[in-house]
Image (tube, rainbow, N blue to C red; front, side, top):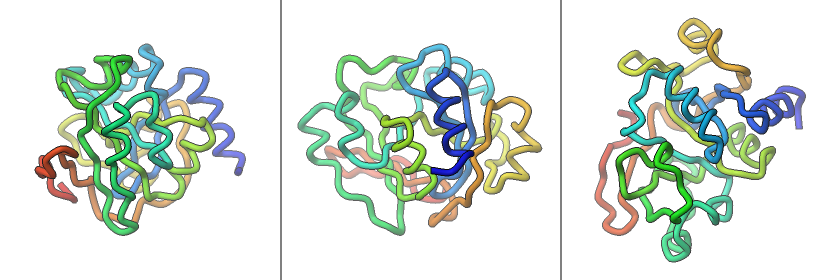
Length: 184
């Protein structure tokens, strides 16, 4: 594990907010069980808490404490080319700060190697929301990220976004309904 990844894990576990590459855009993240860190992330992004957030993990097992067991067993293996965020039934312990005003919880098994390594480094899923101020363009590289949010986050993890060209598709696990097409 590289020096930056060790530093990112230390920041996350210490209650900080980081920026890191995901499948299609840079993301902002923190530990999902740290309400103070989640509130700070929402403030940095200027995102209303009622909208909710996504959790990413390196594999389905990382969501054990967050997702109802029946739903967890039905999360499909990720397609290596197309990221999908699934709306699933959460466990009772999931904070309203993470879910927002929604009954479901948004989770994604990340296919970005840097994001997956980050989850493994903290042995947990992490919050993942696009690295931008609400309503502003998303950052697809570190330079755009640093211009918009660099001074507001505690650490920026180097790496490349990919393999997608934009935000992940969002689907409801129970019905397969598409709530957001990929890349939008």
